[in-house]
Image (tube, rainbow, N blue to C red; front, top):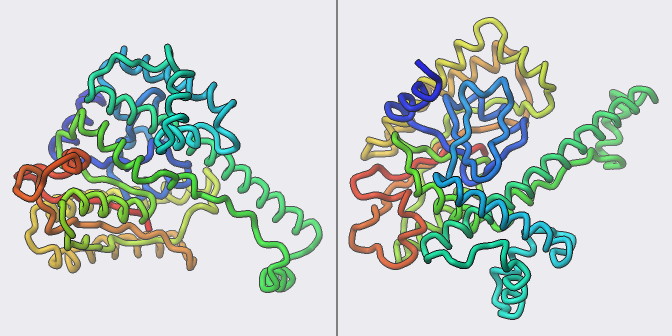
Length: 372
C-alpha cells in the first residue's frame, strides 16, 4: 500500500491529529509531540511543512488551499507585504503591519491597500476574500515563528558555550550552585511570546482554512500552549451568543521530564533503546482508542479512571530510560462538554462561522490535546 493510501486509511478509521493553530514548531517541540502522538498533520499554505526526516513516517503536511492559482496569488501578496514591512513595519516587521491594517485607522488601511495594489487581488467575492486574508495572515505568522525558532537555537548555542567556558574555568558543582542562588549569571532563555502574538486571529484564520477540507476521520486539535485552549474556549463561548456556562474537562494523559536538553543523537538513542519503540507504540495505540472512547462518551468524568493505563506507560518509559527531572511535560485532553452544535437554536450570526468546522450537528464535541 502506498504511503498516501496508508495515511487515508489511518485518517478514516482512527483519529487524525492536527497541529493547531500554528504551521511550524521547533524540533524540540516536535520531539515531545512525537513521543505522544500516533500521527500529526501540519497545515501547509504556500510553503511545505518543516518536518525532520526521522519523523516523516508519522507526521505530514496537509495542504490547505486546493487551488494552485489561488496559492500563487497568496504568495505574491505575501511578498508585497514583506517589501512594505521594511518601510512601514518598524521593528516588529510584517505582523506589526498586519496589526495596523486590521486597526481602526482608515488612513492606515487605505495607505497599505494603495501600496499593495497589483500584488493582492481585489476581484474576490466575500468568501474568497476571507480565505485569502486568513491564508496571508497565517503564512506571515509562520515566518515570525520560524524567525523565533532560529533565535531560540542561538540561545541554546550560547548557553552551551557558556557551560563549556565554565568548565574551562573550573566553575562547577558548589560554585555553580552558589552563582545560581545569587542570580549572578542566569542562563539565556528565549522569549516565546511571538508564538502567541495575535493568537485569537491565528485560531480563527486556521479554522477558516481547515473548514475548506474537513478531516475524513475524527479530528483532534493539538496545541503546544495552554493559552491556545483558553482562547478557543472564549471563541466557542462567544459563538453561543450567551454567557456560555461551560468549562472544558481536563484529563491528564501522562507526563515525562522535558527532553529539550537532549541533542539529536541523544534523543534518538533514548527513543530507539531496546523495548522503548514498542512501549511508545503501545501508548500511541491506546491513545487512539482513548480518544475514540472520549468522542463517544456522555460522561467525561468516566474518562479520568480510563486514562490511568496511559499514565502508567509513560511512567514505565521514564523508569526504563532513567529519565528524571522536575520540569515535566504533560499531555492533557480537553473535552469540550456541553457545547451546542451548529444548527441548533442558540447559534446565530457571524460567530457561528468561526467555529463551524468545530461544531457540527450530530458530531461529538471538539477534542483538544495540549502540551502543558
